[in-house]
Length: 619
Image (cartoon, rainbow, N blue to C red; front, side):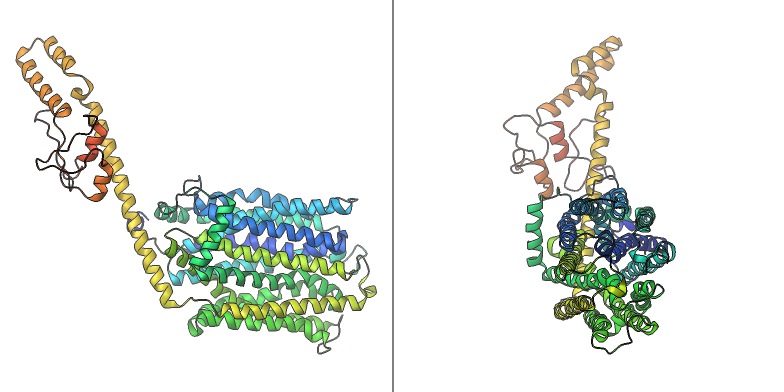
């Protein structure tokens, strides 16, 4: 590791670190599944919160989260001197707030009024969502810093998405196997309020444990990465208005950043439509039984896991942009078809076993298409972070990751606002058995879902086609960044060497009796020895030292511009012909100034562009 750091590079990424980064990706998806799949349904159909209040609370939470994300990203980019580094410090601070917030969201006390329920959801929802942002934004940025090699980055993207899919695969199974089971007098187990508090606690514990594993497993690698990059970003964090001005400037400087923001918004908008309203559709529109509902929630994950192994070869075959466009197009067609075909009477009947298999197949194939999109999208996100870093000269993975999460949070917030408001507008009933739910309201909800998917899909395909992410461009950017980091590592070594020499020179001066004692004290000490033959030569040498230190100006050889700037124009305006520095107006040159003008090298005695001080021999 030490050799790699001196060379300005890092060794290949090991599998333990890759699996630890996979663990880092999982808490966000565990939270997202629990939030998207259950919160809207729980508060609308179980707790009974008014649709308008529910939509307003969810929108406020997610928009506030989106506003916080870029500040978290920019703060993370500048926390080089934090106790655990610029990424891990914020990630460690996220564990407790997230766990407490998400557990309490599902633990609503009985007998609360509408506004009290609204305040409960708003307060603990903010704690959970902002808490997980302090984890997810720096963790995602860390993925772009673990390695700069394109092949390893593809592996990192695959590991991240495997972690995502593993989280989405296991949590629904656990939810319907351990918590939402038949019984309690409810036709659908998700309508029973009793399991929700324990389910929230389960989500909190899973997320917290994975956070600790991810922190410990990536600590050594990130310590080495941040040692290499430390000198690049050292400014203080900005205020919020300054940050948003920088966001606007970032979009102007690197247009791909703005496209990334919009694409992320539309992708999460569509995913949130599917995820947040799946329980509504499964309960009232498709009328799936208890065995098909959890399968439906994991169907997309199964397809995405298959796509993880196909995506690198698909990207190499068709290119990054084509892989993204093709994956998105098929994904949107399948997601819309799963709702539109039953509306048109072109699918099996609701409440039949065949309708469950029909929707499940569409979701699996949609998951494959989504996986073929999301792997190149994550790679493109890291590449855009590199592009913006090359344009600005500073690490920008945290800022660019925050851009993506702005899109994710705003998209999810818009869906929550639209869905909650739509349920309130059509006066969707609360607490009715499935067979008594008015079908006109159910069909209206299905048409609403289809329209949102189609509009978002069309806009998405157009945006992705405008990304400028060619392989040749990214190769040039990586070469430029490698050169910049190599120069930064060289400058840091020079600074450390200079500090070491300064400390050695200072210790030598403190040990020198001539420096510690004046000429009179030294002469008196010599007289006290009773040896006048030794005292006289000593006085001569001390007088010579005094003349050199107090009267003779230090020699001023030719210097580099950097050394001249270090000495300062007030002390050395120019080197006279006699080779001595011109005295300043104070007619005194301090030891620090003299050592800056002429400092001996530890290796050769006299460094380049320096002279040895004129001290008589024997001292």
